[in-house]
Image (cartoon, rainbow, N blue to C red; front, side):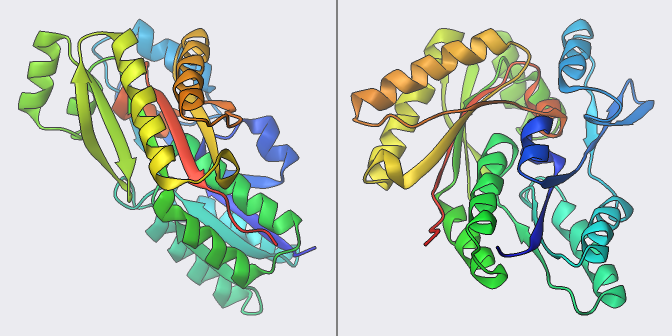
Length: 299
C-alpha cells in the first residue's frame, strides 16, 4: 500500500468519526464570535453549537480564521516523524490563504525532513465538495496508487467539481463581502433566496427565487442539467449533500435533488454532511448544497 498521509484543512467538513476511520488528519479553522471569542472549530465548539449560537444571535456575524502555519506544521511533522510522505488539500485560494500557509509549513518540514515528499494542492473547492475530493484521495491511497500519480489524478478531477447551493438570505454574504452591498439590501427587502454555483474556485450567481421550496427545486434542476452535460453515467462521479442548522431540512433537500437526478436517469449515493464554520460564516445558518466531482481513476 502506498504510504502517505492525507491532511486537509477544516473546510472539508468531514464528520470527525469518518475522518478518523479513513485516517484523514484535519487542521481546524478558528471561529470568532462577538469579536472576542477565538476558538477552534470541532475542538472548542461543535458545529451544532456554532449554528445554535448563530440562530440565537440574529444580527451578529461571526468570522472564521484560517489555521496558522504552526498548526499545519504540527500535523506535517507528525507524519514526517512517522516516515510518511504528505498530500495536503486546502480550501480554494479564492476564499482563503490556507494554501500559502500550508506551503510555508511544507517548506519548514522539508528543511528538517528533506527525504520526505510533501504536496500541497489547492483543491479549488470547499466544504462538502472538498470532503468528497478528499475521500477520492483516500481511495487512491488505499488502492496503493503511488504518491505522484495520486497527486496528478486528484488534480485532474478538480475542474469538474461543482457546488450548487442556496442560503436563507443574503445578509451573511453581504456582511462577508461576498456580494455587493446593493444586492444585499435588495435581497433583504424583497426576501430573495439566491441560487449560487461554485466552480473553478469562485462563486457565481445562478438565479433567484422568492421561496425556500422553490430554491430547492431550482438547485435540483441545476444539478440535473450539470450531471447530464458532464457525465455519461452515475458511475462517473461522486456527490454529496451539505446542510446547516436544520438536519431535517437537509434530508428534504436530498430527496428533492434525488428526484431531479432520477428524472434524467441518475441515482448517485449522496451522503449528507454538516457544513462547517469556515463557510457558514458567509452563508448564514441555513445553507443547502449539492456537490459533485468526477471520480478519480484508481486502476
